[in-house]
Amino acid sequence: MKALLLLVMIGFSTPAWADEKQQQAEQAAELWLSQLDAGEYQATWENAASLFKGQITAAQWRQAASAARQPLGVLITRKLINGTYATSLPGAPDGEYVVLQFQTAFANKAQAIETVTPMLDRGEWRVSGYFVK
Image (cartoon, rainbow, N blue to C red; front, side, top):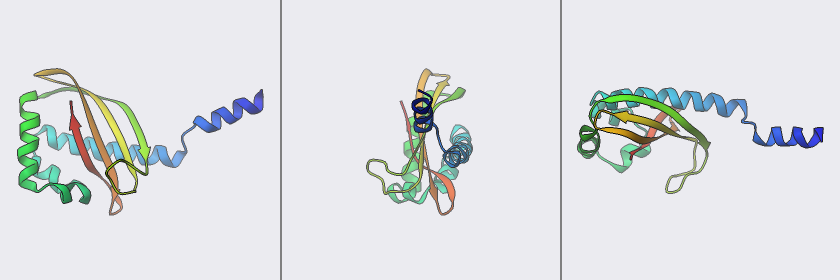
């Protein structure tokens, strides 16, 4: 019984290196989100991962981000509800990613889920994807 419990604990424990990477990714995401919240769309594009910048121009991003975020109004609260480390995601090259989900309230939308996906890019965690619903 003790061996089974130990195996179960090992199977479900997260390695320390994954926790550290997730914390670094969360910090990068929170900084990026603070720029997004402030309407600094150009800065969010400049600080995004190469993958992100390769898929959308700065002008396209400014327009899309403004169209998505301005109707929501100002940020009221944001709470991390899930974070998952991954080395492979659909539609993206293999690499190191952390998929973060936040429960968010805005002035004009009381309940939203923001998904932010930082990736390790050129030795730093940078946001490679953002979605709000």
